[in-house]
Amino acid sequence: MPSVVGMLEQRELGARRRVDELREEADRIQAELAVAELEWQEWVIARRRVDTVLAPDGGSTADTEVTEDPQDSDAPSAPRSAVKPKSQVWREGRDWSVLSVDYQRILQTLADRLRLHQGPLTCREMAAGFGMDVVPARVEALRSKAKRLVARGWLAEPAPGRFTLAQGAAGPGCAS
Image (cartoon, rainbow, N blue to C red):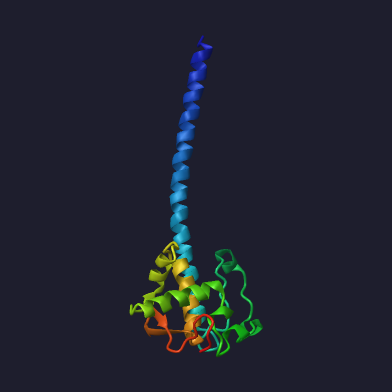
């Protein structure tokens, strides 16, 4: 007859093996999840780009806000006609104070570069400069904001994907 201690050791060994197997499986699933999330982010970005190109207004999404929350990406989007075009924030002659903090931050960064006689920035460089994770979702969010600022005359895009302050853009506290 086996001893009680011997039986407990066998069961403990079996439980330890099961825990090790489950940990290996969890690690494998975690790695798969990370790859799937990256792929999903790329598809969200691609879909937004296609939506922009196929938009009925000729690809100009400057009058609409893009939802940056990836959880909202599966929800049906509101019809474009329901979006209020040309909010007062974007009217000519306004200074930067009427813009949201995110837009002001982009403009200030590019104004500083212009003042220091440095060239245009890419959205990837801006994300790194802002201390953001340089991942496609963050870079595309910045690109979307920069494109809106270009469409409204605050920024210029001298080369594809490179942004600088537009000539005559109003700074903080002054009119253009």
